[in-house]
Image (tube, rainbow, N blue to C red; front, side, top):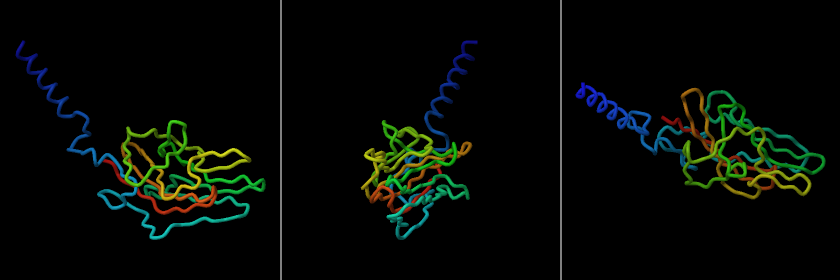
Length: 190
């Protein structure tokens, strides 16, 4: 009986140790992360823009841009640039489903990441964005961190069932509602 308990305990211990933090099959930490600006590593698919899509308007407008980050014919993120008759203007980001989240800082602002920054499921605070400002000005009130920033990255996480994707969207925001979309990518996370 004692041998049976020892054998059972040993098998349990081996099972726990062999599983550890790994999701199985020798998945490396590198495979579970995304480097901002990387558009050519394994499992990465890029929109492939060779020059940025630029929105530069100085008039009243509402200009949405739908992005299908994981290329499944479903809008994941919408960028909304606007200028109102009052002069208020800005650029906001919406995630279009509960499956899509973006990285935010401790104040709830969408983080402006640099090329080379690394994101993982646990390194970031991920939230659904029901109209979060990238850069807005309403009267004298400024919201968002992105006004005047060039070539920065929004980190994106998409969880559909048991399938996880990380992505990034590279933006330059010249003047609140005037911005450039440089590219976006998605990576399937094993």
